[in-house]
Each structure stands twice: as C-alpha cells, then as structure tokens.
Image (tube, rainbow, N blue to C red; front, top):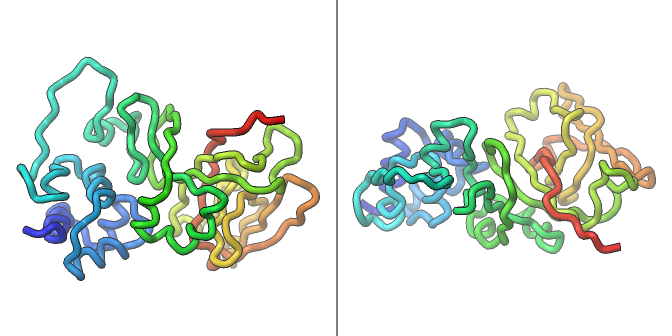
Length: 254
C-alpha cells in the first residue's frame, strides 16, 4: 500500500470525503488531500502529523513510511504530567490543535510565526503545505483547550497603538485563532476580540472591527490610533480571518 493509499484508507474507514477529511484534520482547503489522492503523491510529515493528531489510533510510522503496524501501540501509564494527543481528544480540558503541536514540556505548544518580512509570501503560500512547513515556530504558553488553526503574526506600524494597555505595538508577536469561513455569514464577536484580516490584495492587518453588516458581508475596520481613518472591507475580498487571542512577545526597549 502506497502512502496516498494509506491516507485514503484512513479517510474512507473513518467515513470522510476529501472535503470533510481536510476540515477534520485542520486544513483550510481540500487542495492538499485532493492532490495527494488524485495524483498518487506521498504525504509529507506535516500532513501525516495532522492526520495522527486527529486519529491517534493509527501509527505515524505506518502512515508516513508503511513500516510497523497500522495501529498505534498504547503507551504505558506514566506518573509524569505529559499529556498524549489521545488523552487530549478524550478530555476537553486538555490541548487539541491541528497545526500547533504540544511540546514535551507541559503547558507549551509550537505555533507557526509569520514575520513582517514574510507577510507578502504568506498571501501566496498560506494554502501551500511546503510554505507553511518553512515558517519558523515559537513555543507559546497555553492554559486551556485550543481547537482549530493557530498562527503567530508580527504586528507592524502604530495604527493600533494609542498609548494605552489595549494597544498592539509595532513588533508585537500575537497569537491568533482562525475563524472558519462558514462562520462569517453570522455576526462576528466584534466586542470580544481584535481581528487579524488577511486581505487578498491589501495584505495582513490587525484591526478592531466596529461594525459587521452581515447581509452585505461588509466589515468596518477601526484603528486605535486617531491618525488612521476607519474603512470598510467586503469579506469576499478576505482570504483568512483570525481572532487575536493574546500578545505573546513584546520588546521592552525604550
């Protein structure tokens, strides 16, 4: 059985098609899985890890290289505090995330980081598995369950800096959680979060959304800095939308 056949086997055995399987393992589109199966490609390590994170009953070695048993061996019970992915799936209070991986040190996960200098490339590569694998990763402290796709972005400029503690400053590294596109049809939680907007032509922006016209699919973006005007964006022009969860790194330089 070739690599693509092993992926197809898991997909069909677990009752998924290419679209639903891609969503289940945390991919934003079905491009990777469709090409993998239709063009009979071998899955990358990252794709295999996503699949195993979702379906831990299967062996990573078997899926990636065809070696060993199909099903993973149960790990012996341990008294240490490391949490397995399987345990995380059973217990909603534990960590589960498709593109950010738990480190051996309990309380951390590794998340891909998009630096300012890499943001132009992100617009072209966010759906490309090779590009995503090339991004650096940073460990982030976690204290709750994390579901969905998580990214780190570097803030640029002072549009969200008004000198208060609510500011997002130039150079801040922020943790963001993707909002699935099918949820954009409903009113966004604009009073709870700042947003990271990945626009098709205008690039990546961190903004406060002060209005969401659900009927027409228009959001009004606001900067904390009074020097910047509010502006409207059609959600049809947006590739990705994230909630800004927290600032994970900030320079203390005066």
